[in-house]
Amino acid sequence: MSNADPAIVRLQARDPEISGRILVIGADLVMPKLFYFGDRLRPLGIGYTVYTHDVTAASRAHAEAAGAELIAAPPHRPGPWRLLRDLWTLIRRVKAADYRHAELYSDYHMIASLFYLLILRLKNIPVILWCRGELFDWPTFTWWERLYFHIAIPLARRVILKERYMIETLRGAGIHEESKTIELHNSVPVPRWERETPFPQETIRLLFMNSFKTWRNVSFCVELAVALRDSGIPFSMKIVGDKPAEPGLVEEARRLREGLAAHGLGELVTVHPFTDEPRPYYEQADIFVLPANVIYCNFGLLEAMAYGLVPVVNSRDHDFGLIIEEGVSGFGLPLVPDLWVDKIQGLAHRREEARAMSRAARARIRDRFSTAKMFDTYACAIGITDGENMQLQSQPRST
Image 1 (cartoon, rainbow, N blue to C red):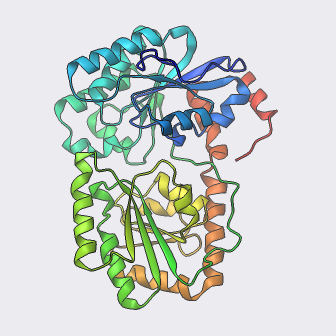
Image 2 (cartoon, rainbow, N blue to C red):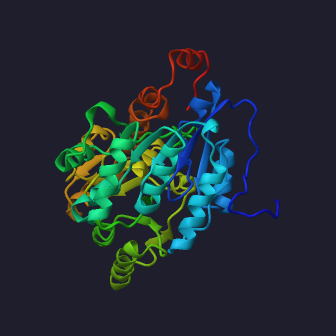
Image 3 (tube, rainbow, N blue to C red):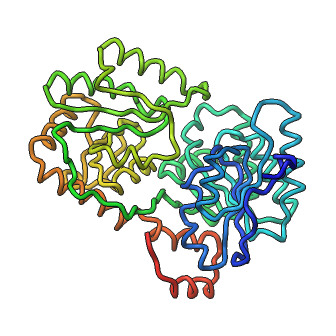
C-alpha cells in the first residue's frame, strides 16, 4: 500500500475491460448489497466505483470481490473541517468523463448528501437517487431533513424507492414525481450453496439478523425465547445486529440485554455485532425471525430465505404476503409469543414438512426476488441501451 494521503488513494487499479463506471456515493457502509448487480453489468463493460469514508479491511475486500474501484474519503466524524475535506476530495478525485451516472444513497447524512448532489450536478454527472429506509422517519424529520428531499428529487434524473410505503410518503409531502420514479424492491443473489438436509438437528436454531431499530421490535425475541423455553422445545437463538457506535440503536440493545439477563436466557440466546459477512449465520440456522413493523422488502429476510431458512415474521405489515406464501414458505403472525411457539413447535415435530418449507422459501426468492429477476427493471432505470441489452442477453447468466 502506498504512503499517499489515504483520503485520495484508489484501492484498486482500473480494469481495462470496463469502459464505463457507476459512481456509488453516500452509503454509510461498503457492503456486498451495493454491488449486487455487478455480475450483470460487467459483461456490458460497466463497473462500479464507490466513494466512501468506510475504509477498512472489510470494505476493501467487498470492493475487490465486486471488481469495484474504491476512492477513500476522510474518516467520518462531526465537524465542518472534515466536511470541507470530504467535499474537496470529491471535487478533485471524481471527474465527469469517468462516469455514466452516480447513484446517491442518502441514508441519514443528509447535509453531506446535499453537497454531494450539488457537486455531481455541477460536474454534469447524472444522479440516480436511492431511497432505502430513511423515509420511514419522515414524520419526525426536521425541516432541513425534509428540505433535502425537496431539493434532491427535482435535481435527480431518476428516483428509486426501495419500500412500498415511500410513494405515499412522497405524495403526502407533495414531492412525488411519477415520471422519474420507479419502485425497485430489494433483491439478492441466490447462493449456489444449498442445504443437503434442512433442519438437521434436534435443537431448532433461530436467527434474528437486522440492526436494532426501534420498529424492528428486537426485544420481542426475549418474549419468544421465554415462551419457547417454557414449552420445552430444544432451541437456540442468535440475535445479530448490535451497533454500539450508533447512539440511536444503543437503547434497544440495552433493553434487549437486560431482558435476556432478567429471564436467565444467557445460555440459550446470544447477541452478536452487526456483520457484513452474514453467510455463516444463515448456514447455521433453521428459522429466521423478524418481528419488525415493516417486513417488505427486508434484505435480511430475502437473504435468509435464499439460504433456505423458514421465516416467521410480524403480520402487521400485510405486504409480507408478497414475499412469503403463508404456510408454504413461511408464516406471518401477530406479536403474540404463543402463536409463534405453535408454528415453531410444528416445524420441530414435523421435520419433512419443515424441510419442504425450507426448499419452498429458497425457491420463492429464486423465482421472485433474485438479482437476475430484478435486473431488467434496474437496467431500464439507469438507461442501458438496446445494444447493451442485446450484449447482456448473449452472456450466460448465473446467480
